[in-house]
Length: 496
Image 1: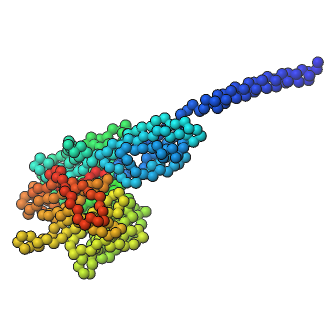
Image 2 (image 1 turned 60 degrees about the horizontal axis):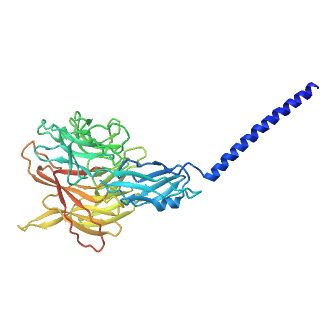
Image 3 (image 1 turned 180 degrees about the horizontal axis):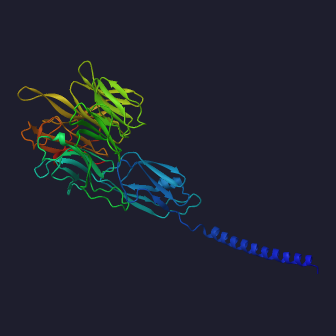
């Protein structure tokens, strides 16, 4: 036999061995496939991820996500997904991921259970592994400034989630007198202005700007949170007097009105962005509010209001003539509330949207103090207005009262008279179910130790009230609602 014949027979034997191996693999795979076809896929359908698992959600949380490990029948999910208590919303999909967008903010101080049973895969009727998870909303908590001898001028946190056992936490020390404050969006810290009581007679001149931690944790992420009461100074009083300030809703921009101690002509607004040094804005001070995204500020100026960009993408500067002041923005920043002075000596409340379309909501002879949007649909506006009331001696005085305006229908519902004190502070709860307001008794200042209001009156006493908000109907011309006394203090603000 020749060498070539031997090589040919060897190759044939190798090919036959390869064929047998390939055939064996085919048989094994066929058997495995047959078993799968007979018994079905053994990996069960389950929820592999839920974005709100164990989380405390708040006003900023508008949607949750559920991810499945296998393609799921969408109609069965829609049918069997349940939330207790009910939390209305809309379902959309991105592949195997369900997105549930809330219709309204959830009610604070509530525990929720989400459950999914009996849903099935797209390619057979095998049900999902039962899914149950818990999440909750943030506590019903607000901050205020104390008035009593033991709490005088201190910033205090008050948790009323359990109405029978409210919890009080004092955040600032006795050697600081708090004058005003703003709360960061996560509620983990508060920005406030304060002075040292040892510096008598020069309270506002010696104000400094601080932050203080609240000790609150929104989500359990394993990161240690600072305890309540940790202070950090943001602006000192060395060269400038720090007057009024504001914090944007997203917590990224601070605007402060400052005056140079040595040169009062050096007066105007300054900005402080997160983690950056303060810088002058180059515009004069006055009443002002920041847009929710921290990109613009609206300032009261002579003859109108100016809109000034704070960032490079904040748009161009504008000046709106004939307006007295801005009362604020809608939550999305698309609408501005402005008070307009009219030629007939009345005032109007005007809403201006981004397209510069103006809408007059009402006109009054007396001052408009403040207005806040109801946060669920922003179709209702709660306003503090003043009226002229005759007392027993036949003298007339301004008296504030609270009313609610339907923005679309321009229907005005009077809610509550607030006698005896004009400088009332309003704060709308983040879930839109209640208002906080204060009433303060004042007198002419007699001592440098007095707590002073924005109208330079000494505070004798103060009371924080809670007003549950009713569901309004167009047929209701007057509504009888009763506020509840909460704490002795003033300037209450809900935590977001």
